[in-house]
Length: 76
Image (cartoon, rainbow, N blue to C red; front, top):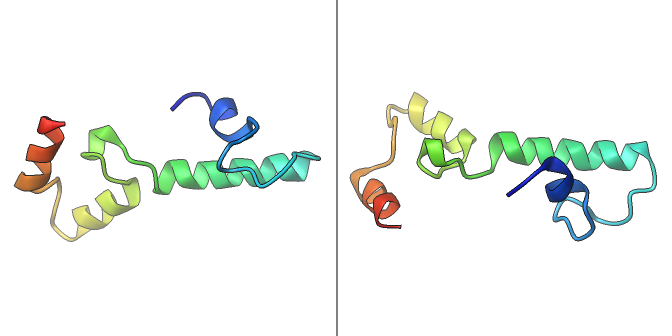
């Protein structure tokens, strides 16, 4: 995607709900972006699954994408 400023702070960012009027607004947007970045974003190194899902799969004994998922990744 790009830099934090471009993803979270710019006008039209999906993390913003309105104008940033003060430090509290910037902190809220930053918290939302960090939460998304650490938990929900797709990560190519992890087989294009979110980190939370990868971790759950890891502890459930599934350490990587299935054969079908891997075939789709290579085909794309």
